Length: 113
Image 1 (spheres, one colour):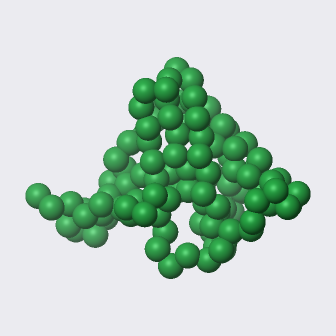
Image 2 (cartoon, rainbow, N blue to C red):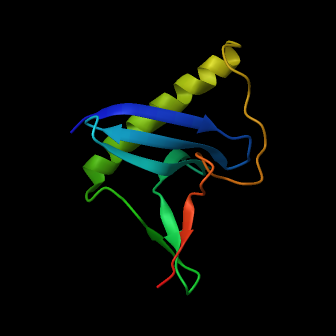
Image 3 (cartoon, rainbow, N blue to C red):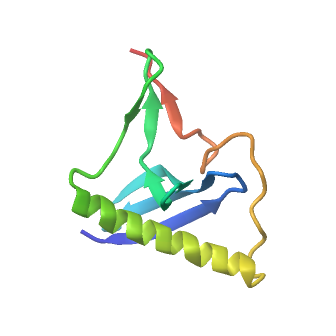
């Protein structure tokens, strides 16, 4: 399995550093991965939805730790490349957003059943 494309949307927030969308094998897209600054550094959080009881459930996620680390390494590397573009003046810096989504449709879905 290969990640054929990674799109990063930067955010100006203390912990939420951006969103990522990944395309697997030019055939399957996963949107709404969050790039988070944690106590031990950057990590990615999988797209999730809010359940009726207020908890969150991942919509899509790796089955094993090796796949999670592989995916996280690639997304974090793409994030760092975007930050480098900002530092080089190639793209504008991120702005603060009140609505945290990467495609205008929201990254958290309400469960309706």
